[in-house]
Picture 1 (cartoon, rainbow, N blue to C red):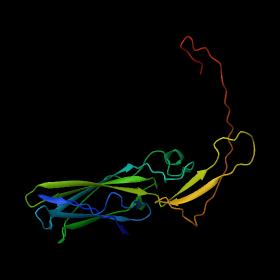
Picture 2 (cartoon, one colour):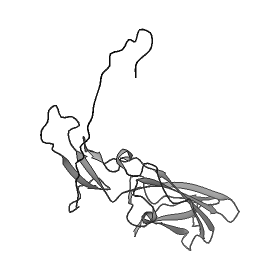
Picture 3 (cartoon, one colour):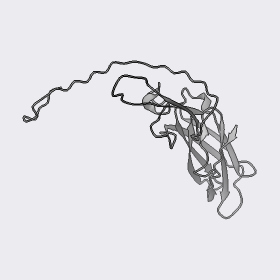
Picture 4 (spheres, helix red, strand yellow):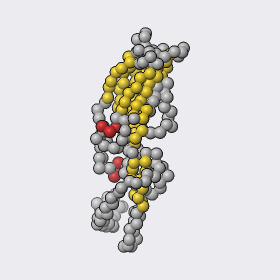
Length: 205
């Protein structure tokens, strides 16, 4: 389990994010942790105070960079699941520990699909004075690998068809040793042009 820590704050306190915006994204094939650190602006940590967690998920559009001409399985146009699916909103509660910290474990392997997604993690900490401080962190989660195909979109005349295949990890780096099966589907495509008179503002369809 990898720790993807982020932090927050409470009452007259501050919540600080441990995980920077450019930190690696999380893979969808393993659980990860989101951490919280609550501390007062004047110094010191916020201990033994109640926390409310709320986690929602949203689709995340992602294509490996620097691979011009390739179409990837992460593209929703080529996914077997057209509609985004996720588990219901997660809500849980807890308390900060002696260090003002708390952790929440998220398990993407429980999801029905491996569609790229963003976890929206909202943490609310209640201070000694009853005031609440809320902060939100976004954690992108990507498939452990994606498949890419590059081939001509148009052949001016019949002949052999060449294709380049790629397997990349969530960081866009080549991933060796991935078994692939390739299937070529032949479809007939007919294009018909029909002359029409547009002077009357009408067109034939």
